[in-house]
Length: 296
Image (cartoon, rainbow, N blue to C red; front, side, top):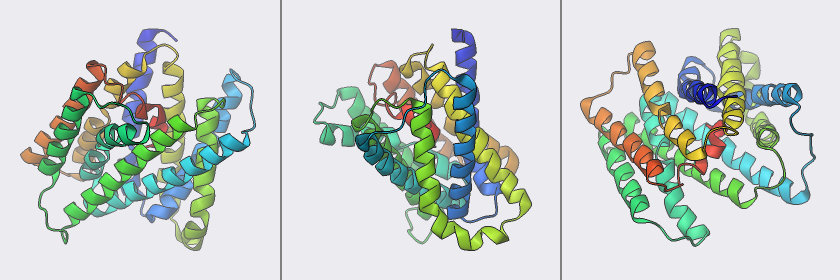
């Protein structure tokens, strides 16, 4: 893979991740069923990718790896469920922008957990993302669907940040695709008891959206990302994946007529610009979470 094709693969991956909220809204099933199906189809897609590439030998996780993968799977399940609840409650645009707060959480938590010094540009990142979220919020009435949805989305970003930090703390010898496969398997097992009662009522068309979500927005997108990282730096990948909210909001605008207000656009632009500038300044903060980009 050349740098040019790797960059193209990254943009395709970012577009697929931007479709996550779109497919989640198109599927009429509950959040638990969507997450269960997404994880199941993702396991199949990642297994096929691993078998086709044959770049690394399949390795069974050690006890330490298994413990980390279990925690990551639980965090991933919570992240996905809260994100799709946000999509159902407030729409794709607010859910996507609320989730984009995860780099700010990472700055704070990484400093607390790993006792790392927080740089000036990272403080600016937190402030800019916080200001962006304030602008995105149409009203601060907790009874409002938009506010409730944004809170679910921010919770999704917090869980994604914890997932990233847990993967950092427990990063072992497992290749990224194999680790993602195990994490998705944990998600499917966790959500099965909640999803099982409603599975017979899921419409065939909803299964199509869920399958696309699991195969393309998870398995294929993650595989493209992992393959491109062999050529492109993680910092460059972080900048590319900052385009994910742009893709998501644009698609929601075109498909669902979720017309963003000027205030929402300003807040979204502030959040995205903060992530891009922070990456360019060498923060490294967005680059670390983006290693788990397949999670979103």
